[in-house]
Length: 212
Image 1: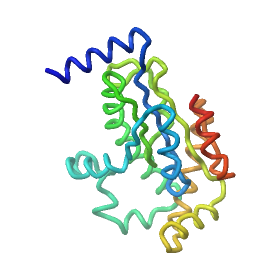
Image 2: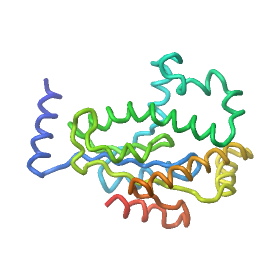
Image 3: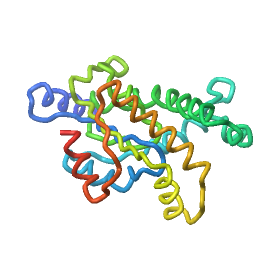
């Protein structure tokens, strides 16, 4: 009952313009540096950072391969995924992200309705998610903002993975680059802000500018 009163009060304040629940989306392929700036991007908005990876773990635990095959494909058939060509790997990644979008829409709706502000950060955030006018029946009303970080150089992604994990991963860098290029094209098509990961010294500044 107490939680209901708090939520109702927050919605009243929203309507009166005193406060506003905001959902920020920080997307981009693996290795572009999203997580390094996530907290600093969220801070000016008073938002908490939520890693989309956490939802992946929950969904994989709570769903079946029969209902959501893409969610379980890597866990059950890693050799099959590793054998995919560029187009196949991109299709797999997009399929996974589309399933994630269903779950993220519900999370966004919850925070739009009762707050508090959050920043959702992860590889599987799609540009199209930022363009929805409603989320599970809750109007966005301009409160969902997004920026995507992209990296144009496949070799830089390989260097990033090596620096971060101490292992050369050319296949992963290739897959990440293909996905990053697709995200960049989608952002351009939909009119969603996308920024280059470099120069790194201005990435945070440019991300914040894109969200304001």
